[in-house]
Image 1: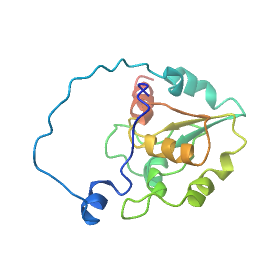
Image 2: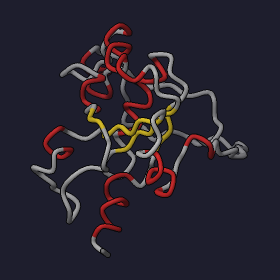
Image 3: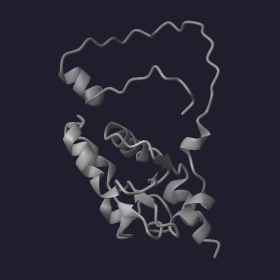
Image 4: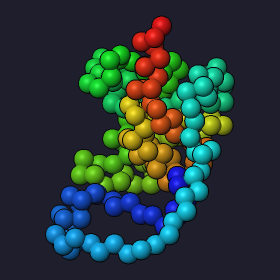
Length: 164
């Protein structure tokens, strides 16, 4: 998002790294001076106003990345209101990887999003914008460049519901 293109994700996470016996160290890393000038890709994000109108447009899809029971409003451990954004479909972020934390194969990534191929734009959200990024990564792997993050997520959306 900030324009740093030399990034990598650790497939399997820390547990996978350690489980595969890669080297680890408890030594503190030495910071090297550098200069990074952020160049935010603000067009990768949407705000609540965009999300409000997205449900009214046929070519936009809103995806809730939370667990299905939270999407359905059956359980809400964090926010004061349970539920989901009207018109959103559910695709839990945990589907992107297996139980060990390794990414599912590319064919699975593509299959996860096959129903959304006709959407001109896909808005992804979760509770507060963190785990939705897992779905954004999956969409990128699947070859979709039409997805954007609603970083406020359900926490932001439901905060306005309390005011009404």
